Length: 338
Image (cartoon, rainbow, N blue to C red):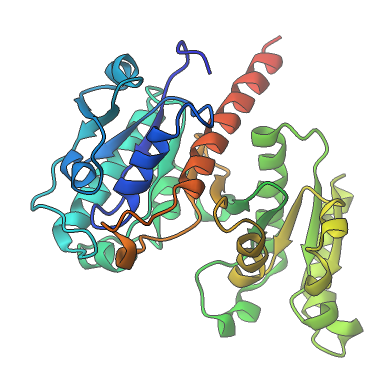
């Protein structure tokens, strides 16, 4: 990446979690994996507490570019109280939310090329009045995009999955599945594969809900009454969509070669294969936004915080994927303007 391009913005996440450590370790690896330039937003003290490398407080994305080679640039948002690794508190939650708000604002304004979010504690955010299901929904609202028009993609080197339903009880999944919801998630996925990955004619494989995709109705009728009609509607629109597939045969190597993304019906159906294949490289990419937003596909890991044990692989992958998607969007806009 040339230094004429804008850096990425990283929201540091909960300062008591592993966010500060994995962001710092990502910066350490910047030359080894050709890391695109980035800066982080949050409390610099939370980084220095868990890492002995150079930290430089900056006031803008442009200033971050001038010191990136020599130090981790941090736009400072000091916590109301010092963060203790592994011990989340309300002050840390407020700092995490403020850093998300500012990093998002810098990305939306064009000062940063993309947004990467480190892990937060939903429980702590809820305790300070956070009313969104998670960072994804918060970012979507701030971008003026309805929840029905976004999709959460989990991406690894050999697999991309998108859950139709996310953080809901498994018992509620059949009640929440509708043809309209499947269509919305599928369309967001197909648009995202084209816009963010440059796939001209994306192939989408749709999973069944029940064992053996319902076994012709013997093991459930959702495939017949909801999923298959949605697939038929997508095919009528000209999309390359297949299914419903038996989920237990969708994710081996030969099957993965037949599609660009798998649309899954519930959280674990999408995340288990992704994490089994790419536990240290999984990235959460929000499709349907006017900006590029990624996140490492793991949580705050409070029990590991401050022990120099956190692996930065997923954060590095999130940073690199964000840069690739942002580049793809720029190229798409350039071609569209010709």
